[in-house]
Amino acid sequence: MRVFAEKGYEGASLSDLTSAMKINRFSMYASFGNKEALYVKAMERFNQARREMVNESLGREPAREAVEQFLRDVIHRFTDPEHGNCFVTQAPIAPDAASSQTRDLMAKRRAEVEQALHKRLERALKEGELPPNTSAADLAAYYAVLIQGFALQAQHGGKTKDLLKVVDVAMANWPESGSTAV
Image (cartoon, rainbow, N blue to C red):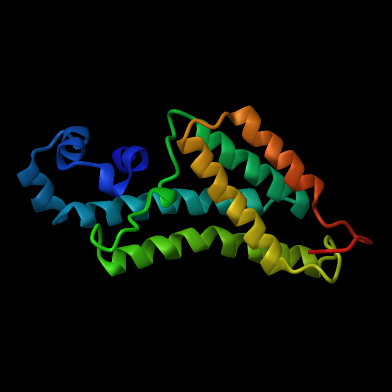
């Protein structure tokens, strides 16, 4: 999993993968079929842990604090050398790099974070934590794009303290009751 997170699907060589797993190529093919099947298996394992973290973070009260802490947690994970880069944003994109099924799976996994945010923001809207004219879908998309940007920045050397300042700006724009909402 770590090799794919660090190098992406296309950048991870069979030598990198077999060395990390401490197996030979024959064993890798016998166990997983091919590089793409191994990638999908690693992605699913990663996503199970990610889903748990997302659900725990967004389950906090109130919604504003849940979203803010979620963004901060994401930045700490993305910039932590032990955690590595965001696996989902390292997804294979080029049509010749992976099958359409795998590319579709990656797109589905990227959408899951936005869907979880949307669900949490819908609940906040129903509970009166957001102004009634707030678009939970637009706000969820906004935070999802921020998260993807954090991942990209972290992959290219972005520093935790700098990315956390972006969270401060984003949260300063949280729709408050009585304000013009998103």
